Amino acid sequence: MNFNQTALELAHLRQEELIAKSARERRSAHRREAARNRLSIRRSIGRRVIAVGERIAAEPALGLARSR
Image (cartoon, rainbow, N blue to C red):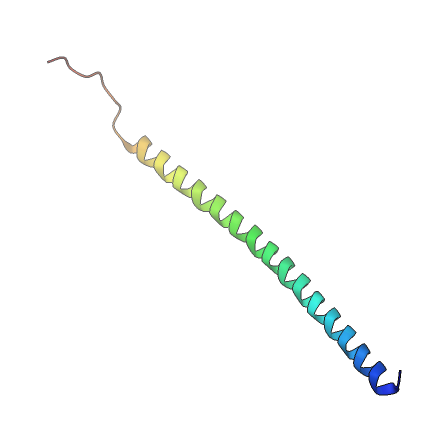
């Protein structure tokens, strides 16, 4: 192998390493984003449940139905 072939092979290996590293970083960023979204969904559902509870609490007390 001459110098140019060796340099080319090393450049290809380095490029493959960079591509793999970039893919790992993207996957890890995607996981972090997904975790943030899960918390956000959880909070929004919790807020909706609380809002429904507040509406129910604001309703006048239920009474017995009258017969016809």
